[in-house]
Image (cartoon, rainbow, N blue to C red):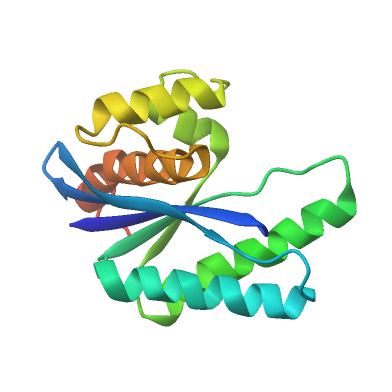
Length: 164
């Protein structure tokens, strides 16, 4: 199974692709897509959608996993992040892929073992869990962590016969 993990952001959206065979995880690729901050919101969302679609076309994942948005103190920022997250959810769903969502704490717990781990701890553990993945950018490492979390939960879902 090939999994695309996504860490949504309006300016920077991390993505990471892993292959899963039983309990073996293999790093395929990762990166960050960027939306120009000098464009209107609608155009930034189009850019984000097209870039994510390009990643989907290039790597052909079987499933996708997206980190859930946490609520900021600034409602306007939370709303904009939610809109970007909607685009990130739409891109794989529009292609017919199952899309799972995971809270940041669950992702951190799956990768580091603690739900309130620091970003640097997540990045370090992603590098250890996925050989050959040493220098991922923080947003890409977060996306890979989402994919790892999904892989860990996929086996249980298959046993229960449920979809993401």
